[in-house]
Length: 498
Image 1 (tube, one colour):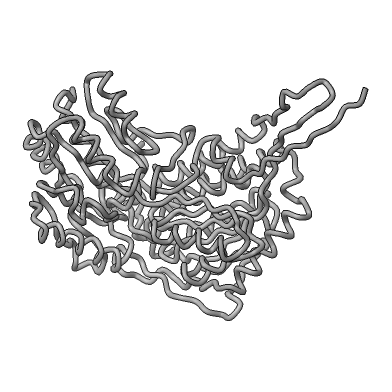
Image 2: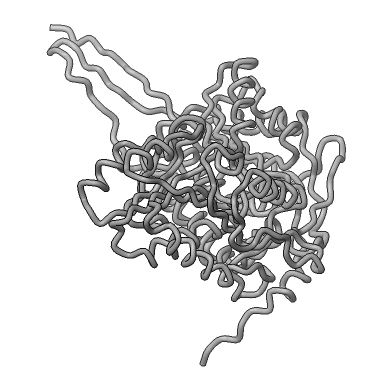
């Protein structure tokens, strides 16, 4: 017999999330007792109290992480032993799927269907994948002469500060935690003040899985307080940051002001989705563009927010996307059928509406959407929005909106499409739609982006790197390449006598 559907509203009413810090394996209040109330973007409900971590709390967390690293309780364990702990951690995440998914939805507004079926399993897979990988990555022996032996080995960098955003709290956290923990580092995680609860719960699950106390610490708080203190801390060896380009610049500044710690930024995007007239399936291209753009309410750094369409097919393409908009009409995120949920808070709502108004002011045509929705709920919802007649010099085409706003820019030929796509301070992702293999390869090579999709956009896996060119950041999350961010290379040169 089919199972009864879960009453997520009832589950939410019973939920009592713990917002205290987690340092050295224990929950605790902020040193000065400071806290803030966290409200849900779904309807404004108060979710609970969150400890407001500040510099003294970061000091405590870093000290715990340093002690754990220096005594080797984690770093000195064999890779196979670390693997087993991280595998148990991944299993516990899957076991807690409903709890974590509900926390994620209440915290930042995404539909429960995606929290449960995308975010939770993706976070678990990431941790399990790095667990499996770590005892299969070999060091090197350099090709020296017969009187020497040169060993090239990877060692953990030490204490890693991870600062993650509110749009994919679990997934972004796992992208840092997986390679950092697998290689033996200790971590201090600073989640966004807009979505702190799953990070704190993950740290508890890690302890239950056998991760030693002090290896994974979580300090929630505001960016200008806890985040800045972590980035400036002289005993933090590396920072893994995902967020805005504006704050990414500060991360580099903080490194220069402190200990020149390594900084790896994964920043914004304004990804170009290029549709040529020889695309073999315009309907699929339109469905993919809409689905990728409106997924997660458009709050994705890799969202295809600039859709470049050849002028000969632009009218038909726009009509097809506009016809899809009702599918993404905002709804109650706790309803399992809802496709698009709430923006994370009122500030983000106002930002998105301001960009929409700027598009109208600069002469673009709003084809559908463009308004706030569901105001009676007390939550923060915006209609799926489509603009046509956008120019690449308009503000909405230059800056990251981080909302459900798709901009169509028309082009005349391949050269113009490449020029427009590359005419951006960002270079995170791109997509090329063409039936001709030579054009697909030619354009993909010409695009300055970290990932170029061909005749798709939504296919992805932990096995491939994620990151971008230009102001989209440096370094790569995911894949084996992420190990480069959390390890140091050491050369040990031995002279072999006669």
